[in-house]
Image (cartoon, rainbow, N blue to C red; front, side):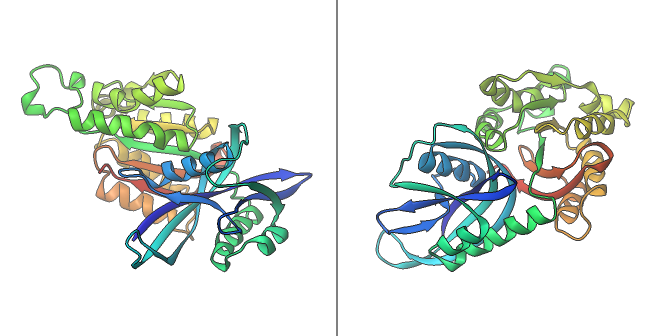
Length: 310
């Protein structure tokens, strides 16, 4: 199996939904921006990278779209299967300079794009994107929930528990989270003040030029004293509707995940994914991405992704 990832950049012009297709002169075909994962790379990072490398556009990933599987020849010439995962994506920057064997980008309305696409398998993603738009769930904002990465064990740490730092594997995971959070365009960083939580998201905050906001209610100690503070912080984020990351602890996260499950679409997989994460727990360093529409009392979770630490 060859893993690959891509995205469907979309925009509106005069009220009409448009998507961006790329043309590869080597194959003389029209398709979505996509490419193989690099060693150790996670799917959403590859999707955002491939779009930039082929079109020059920086994108913010939104909800997931159907994946595709099709036969290809591997490096030895043997037949294997390529699995490509896709996201809806909004362009947020870039120069639009073509790169990486792409000689043209076409912004087309849905009927024209459906006709222009060279492969029937690429129709599935476009249909799903159009359906999400019709349902009012295409324009989303992400809320990324993270359990702190691996840290020094309690038994080996002689000082106060909130000061317990990440171990080498934890620091590696914190660094690896930088492009993951960047792929979703996170603009707000909220974390427990415990060192192991802060240091999990601080590398991204520094890289993005964002101030990390410390909330005592997200710490283990604060949650034990005032269990209602952590859900309060989540409510504030739902009111704002900004792309945000929250880093907290194993005992605290179920209360937040259950709250999100309560506002998830009941007829989709999002509610189940959130309930499973709340009941079974998140692994250390795991990132759960909840895609929401609306804010405040009208906020709804329409899609969920989970990315455990390697």
